[in-house]
Length: 255
Image: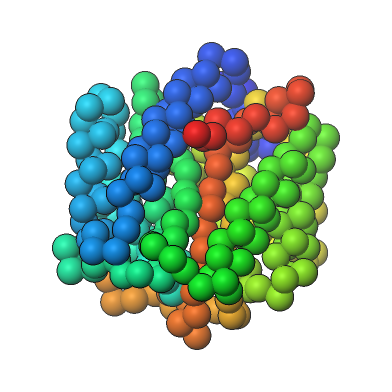
């Protein structure tokens, strides 16, 4: 596998394997979207995901990764990322739940996240979901060979801040391949004083805006994983894995 400035460049065969890994993630996320409703526990979602991985013959990428104990990150309302599934966390009307999931297929990782409304949500909550999802798409549009990595960051930041939402800075997107997290890091804001890197064909990137109704400040709960907004306002999270190609960005985790 070739490297450019410490970043692995994937060939067509490797991108093909990653396309299948990400397709399977999107299938599971579709399945979960059909069952998310008031009265469902986040552990119910975990069990569905585990069973789907068994059926597909793939390994959940997150389970055991750096000690994380579950296949899914289920983050409800003010939880940003890395929430634990739980029998006691019952989804209620008006909640939002972010599901982040990965699988390993033939040695390569897929990774994608979506935030789902539970039943009917308020207009303000729906706006948060819509802006976060659209900011991801605007970031992806900039993932072209020859662009700077921070063109992705700027597109996300400009769109989110135009709606006066906050952008989480503690957690960022990342390269992905044989490892779940590879270089480069992909912030959802433009870091001051850093040059960024030129995007090259063969890079595979997991772009993942995390957007809040309040400030960007974060706390991690006593389980040492679950990250929440410090002001306890709502947070949404969307993620796609994309390949940088000569024709432009190719979304591998599209449904």
